[in-house]
Image 1 (cartoon, one colour):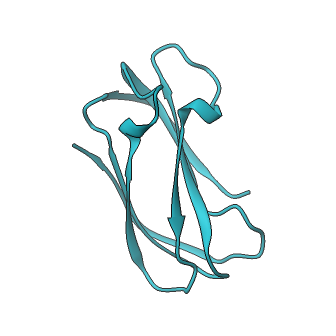
Image 2 (cartoon, one colour):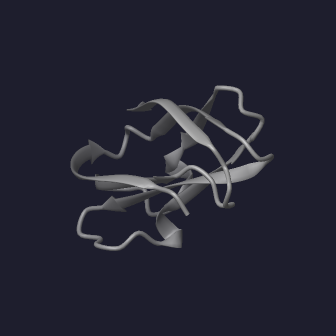
Length: 100
């Protein structure tokens, strides 16, 4: 289960659009974005939003509305991105943007 994460963030909750440009191989899958807000210390299902991806090897931009997670409130202090769930995939990430 590949992922990357970052901590030490200070993101207001109104920055709720997570946008990633990436490619993946191996067919359809789901990517997941996790977050920590305020005093949370563990990533959980309540702090996760999924997005279906097309695994055809072509570069695509996916947009995730993080405000659909009930826990998206307060100040976001960490993000984790799991680009695929299945093994044996090749992933290329071009850019990641978090905005309004």
